[in-house]
Image 1 (cartoon, chains in turn yellow, purple, green, brown):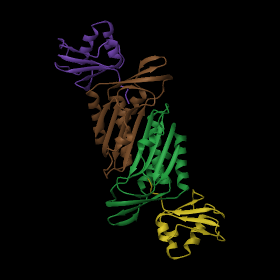
Image 2 (tube, chains in turn red, green, brown, yellow):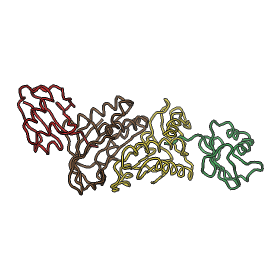
Image 3 (cartoon, chains in turn brown, orange, cyan, blue):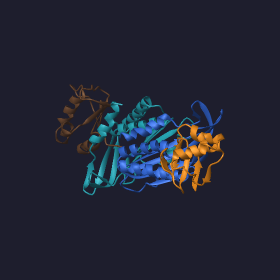
Image 4 (cartoon, helix red, strand yellow):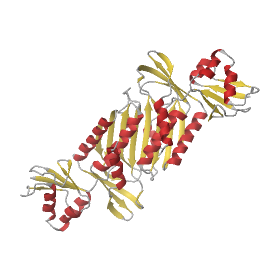
Length: 83
Length: 83
Length: 150
Length: 150
């Protein structure tokens, strides 16, 4: 099972802040997970089109080719704007 | 009349913090006043020997060749060490 | 070293008292960020700060630890507020204590520059023209990157 | 803009409240200098700060005014204590309020760097080895001079 989190405008666009998802077969890295989620259609397309979307795996910044494994916490969010 | 002020180790060495002095004849700038005061002998020699001695005229930093006129407030002191 | 995320306001004087009493400390530099009433020509009525609980704390602790490796500092503190804030409200405080002022200034500026690009916080502004998520600034990215050359 | 010389201690939180409520302010940077318990390998028991009443205030006001010409700042505050101080006591506070943090950091560091070389204060330390007037530091001179190239 993956725990997936969405923040800021992405959370608003998707209408949800988190979900639990059994690791889809064939999804081994961040890029593949993004495509898998975007294929849900509708607002999920944001996962491919959002500018500069960032991803963290287990609360560490990740890249498109970072590996995803069962049990991971994966978060998608826009560039940060705190401070 | 000049008002002359001494600060920090200079004040301690001279045993006084200020004095009023009629403008000595022939004293037209800072260098001449230093020599005039140092000529008093004893601890006054500090005015010539003290390393990096600074001078202010009417509370503005001055140089050796800055002009001194009757009525001025002249201060001698070591490099500053506040903050 | 301490990192806190909270909804409540803070009193900088009281927070700096945490450093007080360590006779090695010769310099404290503190930065406070506040909500301005305008941004990109829009009038700000209110702001909401969102964060990523867990990761935000880790990211801030990593930044502070990095500052401690780069400069000789004695203590550091980061407080970041979340939730609803209004113009003139405090958003964030960064404070660094060191023996000498150069390290305290550099480490303080490093921490806030890095926080702006690496700590997962997001600002949503309510302006007179409606609500909008604040976009990341190119200048913040540049401010953060210049430390790579230091 | 305000400049104060006083024997009494100060509360930085309260002093910064002076800036509070101006909705243009997005950043406040504060520096506090404190008495350390050692200097050049000697143990400091006590310190006495002397100043040149009149000229010191003028010099500080000139430095703050120069900072206001070089950077876009909204307000600034300098408080310097005189008289007898002990380790861990606060000596000086410099605080700058600005729209953006870059100007606040730069102006704050500029003011304290300039204060260290241009404001007539002198420190006399009482150490376990006796009393001595603190000598001006070459590093302070360099810190002050680097602003000439900015």
